[in-house]
Length: 255
DNA sequence: ATGGTAGACAATCTA
Figure 1: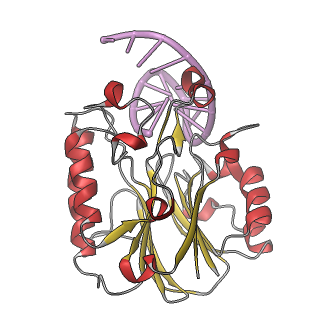
Figure 2: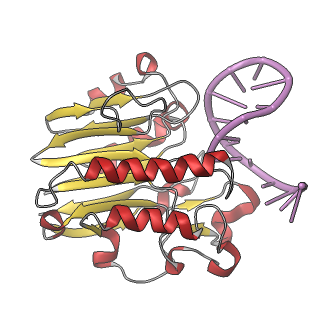
């Protein structure tokens, strides 16, 4: 059984105790992290190595940052979405584990509809589709991370309130669909068609306890890999208790 | 336009 998780941890240094505890408990084969917020030299790899994880990192100071933790050997690591020059922001990391091409992304948030950051987000999604167009849809490929897009009404606690807003505007949903249309299945939806399944709740206004969530963290799988997908779960418990991230992990299992 | 909290890092910026 291969298990792959994605988790926006919002600072790995703040989240280390919780991350280590969760890894010991769940022991996924591979974990894709986003918003590590640390330069590679300062990544706290030692405690993770001690519990069996090799750490592949692509960080930066203060913002963004992604990492892949893996219990199994990894090959063909790439750290940029761009083919020519390295990305200016650390939002992309890919590696092959157990024959599966694993792509970890932290999509731009976009701040507000119509802002320069929003435009950057849409362009970034276009570049992501460009990367996918250089991959084989007949291969086993998994694309996961914080997409910063809720794809459908059932992924939003109050779709009417959110319609047209950042994370749920039509151009963002369209950009997300363009990525899915490369040849993906949304792994969670293979097993869970129901609404009310969220992965992110704002820290403010007690959003988690009020059920004000969105599903913006996704695991997308190519069709050959979708056939092996036996379970997908959101670890809601990780949004509770002392010092949680504002995101919960999502974990997919493959036979 | 605002509000509300968390994190990085030291006055705001990002989410």
